[in-house]
Length: 230
Image 1: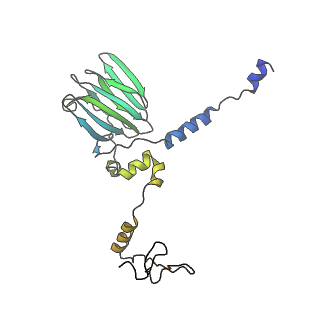
Image 2: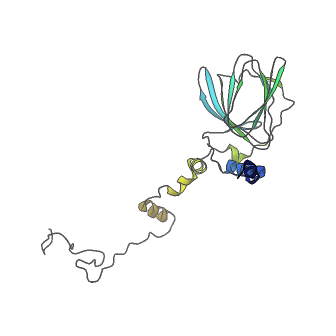
Image 3: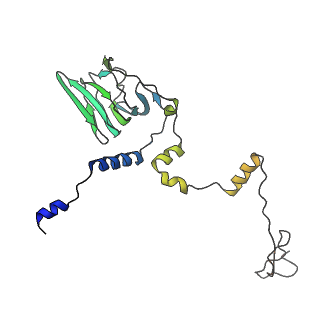
């Protein structure tokens, strides 16, 4: 078999199938669900993190089809770490303008004196922010003409419970979680007005020491006298 026949028989990948598979894996992939209270923003919500003397952190989610205003800070720096989605970053330093598309795993550094605007496309974007302390107190809004405010649903602003976070990050663990004890189940049944299940002990025919009326007169094993232990 020559090289030409091998090339003819070689299966060419289907680009559409690859894209479809990638979309399925992206939807089924697990994501980190950040705990803590949510604070509404014009483009989604933010979750406050660490606040120190030199730097502070927080987590932010921008909804699909949203855009921020154009910001600038003369004295402080800001760094973004993309966790999911595609974030479009437009920057301007002096006369140099730059447009960048950042995906999950990318890091975007916004140095002092840089004008920047963030935007999303067809999906929401989640990213982690580390910036100089008290950054927002003195940030300058260069232009708000491009700002597209989004209506944030109240459901997005609710603090996720531990069960919701485990269900999204480790759904396989939900089926193996320990169930409540029998005593707790009986107590719950009593409080709800239902009768507690009764345990009935029935004698086993043909067995020494069979239980009668729920009381065993003498154990079938062990050395005990006819008069009993006492």
